Length: 283
Image (cartoon, rainbow, N blue to C red):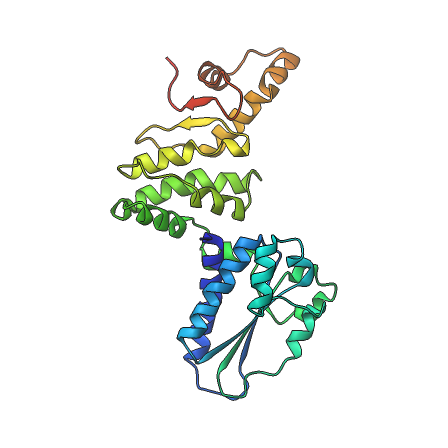
């Protein structure tokens, strides 16, 4: 399972469906460039696209992974890539762009992975780019709602995927990217690994998320059940508290600690990764 691979596949297949709906021609091909990705993401993407082309014989897939991309992978993944014809054995990934389109009238789908390793990038100028930025804006529409909905459904909480709850997840996850604490692939992995087996409703699921950010150097947060939170501010404050920068700044400037610092410091007394920050008013 890879949420990011699913989003890339959806982006590619959405354009494939559009091309298939057009009048049939004899030389039709769609070109997609995918940057370097973890092995499990690439394999999940290849599986998804290959399965689609098996079901729909109107499309023919050419999926190639740059040799410099897969050579550092686990042996099992390398073997699978070679056995299924996905591994580029030529050392020249861009040469595939000159391959002829299917002569059977089928739509050719060419996906080249590891294109950020290619020195002749100009030869890929007419490819659809499938980097995280494009996928985030054009396929995901700058929201994590699809990923969260899948996670909730897998836990039997599909009915809890309300607009309000999905917005809460977005409010908590977006600042992680905005502040550079995690990239899109890291956030995908966080959502994939949420253990929702004990969650009984949406608020439980959100609480599990807020207990799962310690790998990013943040404490364990215990969110309120209703109030809207500016999570970006709390991430900044928590990071500053654990790095002592708030104390140092206040000391150097000869200023008393702010009320916000006092509120955070009263409830966050353990190191990052083991502390728990309860969000709310200090008493």
